[in-house]
Amino acid sequence: MLLYLCFLSLSGLTSATAAFDQKVLGQAYPFPENLGSAHAVRTASSYISHELQNALDTGLSKFGNITAKANSLSATMISAQDSQPFLDFHYSAANLNVSGGSTNRVTGNSVYRIGSVSKLFTVYSLLLNGGEKIWDMPVTKYLPELRKAVSQRGANSAIDHVQWDQVTIGALASQLAGIGRDASRFLLKQPGCRNYPWTRSRHVLGITPSLRALEEEPTTEFFDVLLKRRPVSLPFNTPTYSNAAYRLLGYVVEAVTGTSYTEAVAKSVFQPLGLQNTSTSSPGGTGVGVIPPGNSGWGRPLGDEVSTGGLYSTSRDLAQFGRALLNHRQLSPLQTRRWMKPHAHTASPFFSVGAPWEIWRTRSQISSGYTIDLYTKSGSDDQYQALLILVPDYNIVASFLCAGPNAGPAINMAAEVALQSILPVLDGVSQSQAFHRFGGRYVSSDAKNSSLLLTTDHQGPGLLVKEWLSNGVNVQEAAQAYSDGTGGGTIKSIRLYPFISNTEDASSTGSSGSRASFRAILETEPVNYDSGVLRILNVDAGQWGRIDQLMYGEIAVDDFIFQLDGHGIATAVQPRVMRDTLKRV
Image (cartoon, rainbow, N blue to C red; front, side, top):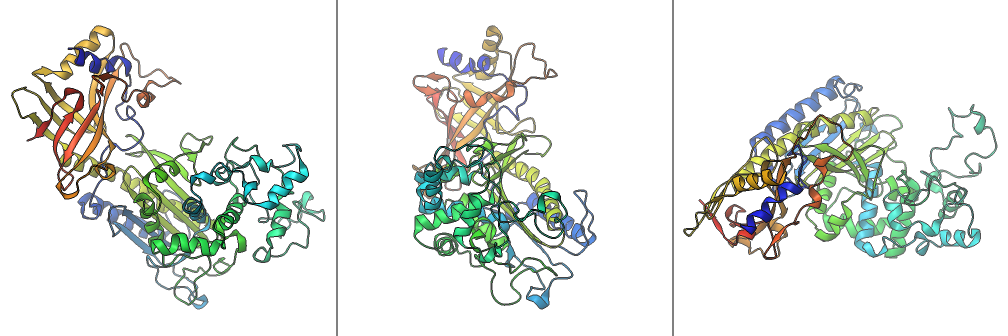
């Protein structure tokens, strides 16, 4: 009986009103598989393609209007487990600059400028070549120009001078350095800005009139300009976007590898991952790039700014890069998990900042369901826009590239259409596959009268415990009786969630079978709880602190292990605290 009391007391410690919020952050179901052959995914992909085609043709969309037929777009969505995308949409604008070398037919191998998506490759190169051990090192360790500035200025005012000895590699990567956005771009002293009073002096932004074009700017002059810039904030205070930070990280890549940035990123990333159409300079030849008419910025060299926004790539290459991250092709699973985490929040509850991840928070059904985090990186360069999205909970990657006069609104439209269409479908497919792989009845092989019935439903995520008998005792009824006696409230459901997959289990035995670890979470409603009362300290948010909380005989009462066959289908389950194995029937 003590066993039941331990398990049931979870109801007194756990209180929430919504099953969708009463879980820990992460997967609700095991990763969906074979998405390309799933009927619901194919239907959603067809709908997305139709909507994008119509919006680009007409220029009309509920997400904002654009110039009809003027913007080229590539959109690729793929599962990390698959080799072929389940969405591969490409649109060619009517007025591409073919005489200037543009392709006249956009495909998945057509090259675009990707702007600040380049920052992902810079951090990735640092992780491959320097590892996490350099993350907390001050940037002055690698860049003598900044080290010299610290020694010359001493303990000067933090309002007037960046405290470079407090700025770490990790601070630069996660936009927490507190330094200026740019050191040499977007000068105010240019046509259109000349009539403002503050532009009439001889020097603007501390930059002398002799500053040469950006692509010819020497490194020494960059540092001269950078060191004249005032700090925006103190290091690690609040995230503020900085391109200059990633130019510095490009120099750190060179210091760590002993080669140029171009050579380092090609040798470390492009070549090993087979990204044949990704480069640090515009590709030669004609018919390769997507080039809008006019001053598109296609061939403009960025010099040492390449590490912050100068790369060229294709939607398929970006999708393959995302697959490599999720599949741990080069970084270990541990390194990847560390990297793909927020480093700071913003003023919006829906957006956090990583290194350099831009992390958007939504829900599985967009306006309802459980929390889903999208790890993204956007980029902008003249008439080019890029967006790479990783959805770890579903193990998928999406890449969007756009070129044209309305590239910004167009890519936002495309991302919204695709995400709002596919995320609910992925939730449904994941749930359906989870039921197929894990749902059904499990029974004891002896005369103990123990069984477990698992299903899925639309009232909450995870595997729902529909029935549970242990040695003839109805666990759910006993749990509710104990909760009633202790004032623990109403137990709405018991649900199982994946924590360690069979692919992450070192004891996996390949084709003969493997294991997967799940944990049980109780959805409860406290006595006299009024869901209509606004609360700052929301009781829905406490589940992360209750996992593995209660033990019996040195075993956590919420610990479930599934035995899987060679196809990942459950054959048995062990509610470990019951010390019994139930076979699936």
